[in-house]
Length: 243
Image (cartoon, rainbow, N blue to C red):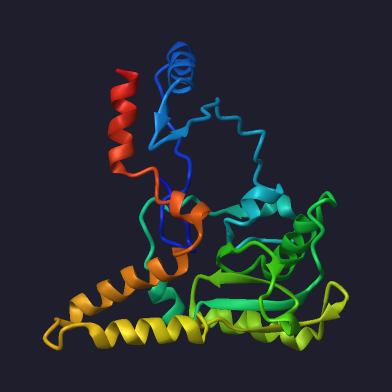
């Protein structure tokens, strides 16, 4: 099971390794007729050529410090196999928000990839945990933006400084800041912290705030609510379906 660096929830897919080609084919036929939590499954054979390391989809998943800006030299970051502490990374200031990026036209092929590629060339030497989707910011003056989580606060600060000092990024003014969640998130977390019993052990407060933060960022987003699956229970269901 793999997890998202943004929500801490499991991703909406999993991979299953079977002993031979015959079993793999049989499993695909069986699971094609199976539903999980009311949703149909779309099993298919894993094709490594579909998502080579230098293509767009995997750039969102970040990279380890890489030797050069050539995408083919990118050191692949393995998927997260344990749920990350997403509030801890926010508090540690590992996130940088990049603003005023070029507008993205979904109908234009490579529109997203051009921006991701530029970030890779600029930050290939850093430990990049992941990049969020480029989207229009709710505050119009910020324009189009995305967030990048770095492996350490030091790297986040260094990347921020180098970006701003460059002055220009993809033909536009280079704007960025440390992402701390925003005032609405802060208010909700503070209100929740104040609502906890005064005798709540300090070690439990952190875990409770982590869970609350996940609820805050997932709330109201159906697509992300679904991403809470598959769960360990899902794995049991698959086992029963396959016999």
